[in-house]
Amino acid sequence: MRIDLLHSEHRPWYMSLGLRLAQWRVGALPGPPLTISYKMYMFQKDFVGYIVRGMAGSGGWNKGEAELFASFVSKLNQCDF
Amino acid sequence: MEAHAAVAALHMPQETLDAVLNDWTTADIPEKTRGALKLLEIMTVYPQDIDRDLINELRIAGLDNLAIQEAANVGFHYNLIDRVADAFDFPIPQGVAQKRLARMLNITGKLLRAPQAEEAWVEGQGGVSRPPEVEKGRSQLLSILGATDPDLRRSVEAYVVAQWGINRDVAMDLPSELENYLKKLSLYAYQIVDEDIGALKHSGYSDGMIYEITLVGALASALVGLEAVYKNLYR
Image (cartoon, rainbow over all chains, first blue to last red; front, top):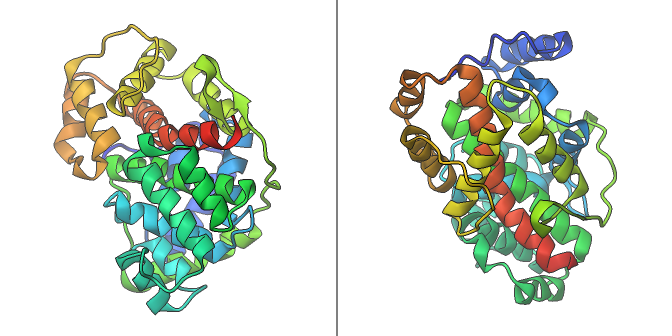
């Protein structure tokens, strides 16, 4: 990581706990929740709900299709994430 | 394989996934899915080409307004998070760790209670159409008290959308080191290297400032395609 996203005075305790659990299970800190929770107060809650909705599969798309779309866009962006 | 391809592979045959990622135009998939992939490619690579003809083409392929809107949601999300991932150099788990992450993402996606999608849009500043939730999120990110001045954040947004040929009425000049970074973030974020972030730090930008500038820049870039979809879908 190029900036220190791990240490944040704004991160709620439940996000810290979730990140630690993910790190224990996967062996790495997951980037998106680490980033959002760094300054969580900057993210409007309906906006977060909007993003969660898309990734769960909505508008007639299922979870697998949403993940396919995510993967496709990442490939177009030449991003390994 | 990246993590989301690994999650997609939990839901479809690997050969279908590979065929789509190799060449979506020839993959053996429903025409509705192919339509969504076309939309996502245009949103990501040449968003200025989104027009009513494309929307009509998608409708003929079987996508209704909600299907177009929610495919665009995923496109917007990943055009945002990919830039942030490249800028901050997110760790990319491989092998067993990646399989574990894929299962975790899959389960998390099922557990999170997401609001129901509805056909809705609002007209934001400058007559731009956006989903109501995105308009709220953008407004908060640009205006809330942070490590950077809100005027700087608005200028970052204006600079980024200008890279895509869109002019916003914001007159603040940005320092050259910031312009160099934002140009990469907008157009080829995968080329961002340690030295780019190092140059910002050397110029006095704190981690908190780089965080906010990156978020606003990535959001602005991702919004270009989403706004074009909403303009042609609902207006």
